[in-house]
Image (cartoon, rainbow, N blue to C red; front, side, top):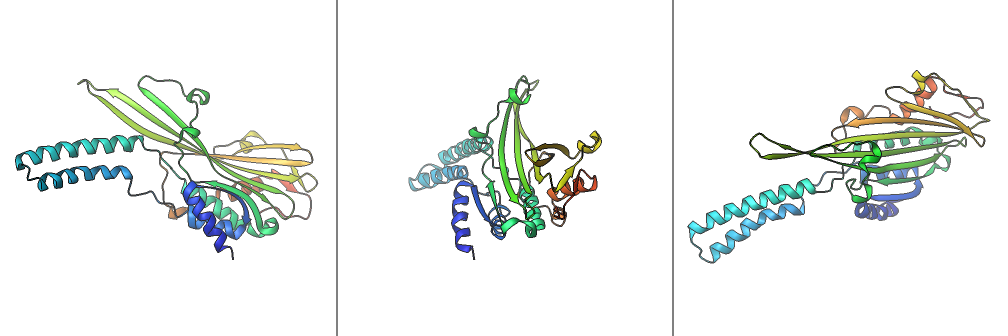
Length: 295
């Protein structure tokens, strides 16, 4: 039914790795499955074409009847040169670092609540583009990264998705994921006088679920600190202009971001479902009307 629109959006997404639109629930699920969860790290990069240079040189020298004693040294030197250039370009290459598992958490949650979504449509924006862009660069000093000798910090931040979902009872459920990638380059001098440079990356994912509930339909209760802030969730409650706001934040730290889904997470409940279940289990919000919140 929406195949034509899906293909049009898919082409635009493949080019810019971004989309922002209001679409039916089934459309978003199909889009995420086809264009986001199918993401694969490219196996070939243009810089690898540099390895063809020694081959081209060899062909030219053979066609020109060059002396065999001259060919091997030239091929060896050009190969070594190309190898180090590729290593250098690889180290400098921009990284996408797309959190496939996090997009899967989004899809699982949408599936779990699709029957409660008002008019079966909602607004969402997605971004599976390169995070290591200058436009995403943060100031290390502003996020508390002190300067270190022979160490260079480059932190990047990117909003991966944000969805605003209106439920049939008039409540609003918002989901968001912000990713921070810290690239650390360290240079050490050995006792021999040679220097060695290492680069590593650390990643933080900030998952946020916000519920906007009518105060005539729901009550919220302040809880002790052990419930409102623990090792997994941080919860903020406040009331404004006739609505209760319940914000649940989860921070996930990882050293590696896989480009394939992990099988052991496929059948587990979504992280966002677990957030809501935590609110219900600890009676942080209570229903006072006949409307039913997400279960």
